[in-house]
Image 1 (tube, rainbow, N blue to C red):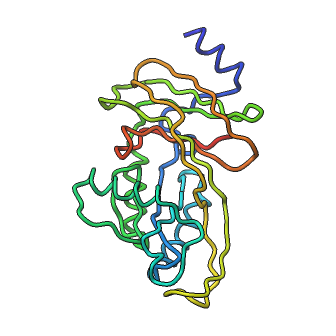
Image 2: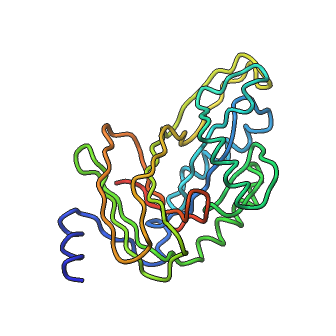
Image 3: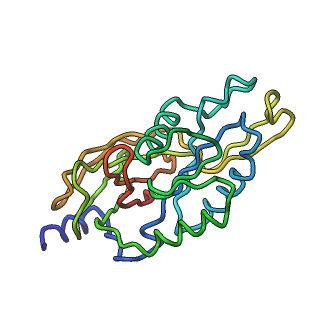
Length: 233
């Protein structure tokens, strides 16, 4: 234990206190599209969630609305694939927008603020089975994880997510033609930094040039429950 503590001091990575909500935010993923007429209320709600220290709000723009006349400028096929993966994992046959997925588990209509808040509150009460800390070191992000309770079986993915806090678009075609809308925490890059067996302690350094905001997620498999999350300091 002394060696682990020394490593943390050297890297400047203070492990979060057990049950401390700011250090261990609840992850809310919004699947949205600039071509979806029912999405703006959910996009506005995500702005509110993005301002909270106890929530890590992420906007993943999907591409399956592009055919109706407006190509979403932030959409990525990988975001659609992630949404479909959650649907398969949860036994759902359909995907839709706007949809929020909380901690990789709860499926909520993205504009339903009450149900979203209820789901966030439930996950805030659940202890995290792993400690997670992340910090910049030059052009890298150093990630440190440590098991502190029984972990889910199978592989745990350590994922680095990079995002832009606010982007604004003037939409000229499609269902939202004529509107100028802003989007919070638009995901630009999502990469698997490492795989972990969920035992002991893991430390990894991931290239991350530039100062773009980032976060780290621990997730059971690609589409399972999110175990822990941390913003990159």
